[in-house]
Image (tube, rainbow, N blue to C red):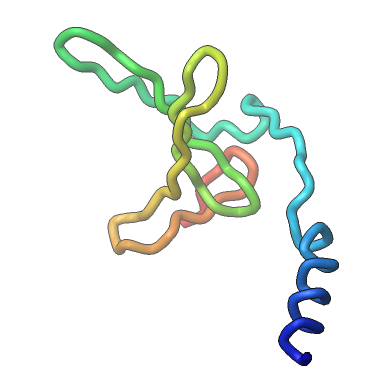
Length: 87
């Protein structure tokens, strides 16, 4: 009986726990634009600041295909503020 009450309570609260979508303007959060070149093709990789942490975004023309946190030389997440990296 207790288990079913917990499942019911969690299922009722799940919609409240999900994050709301929010628009992110790339030009306002851009720290650095990196051009990655191969022998045949080149790509652009963007380093952006979201919620105080730096991330790499690999975009395609229609949508981003990957996002990954940036780590400093000591293996800790890189912190940022706006378009500046905190040291």
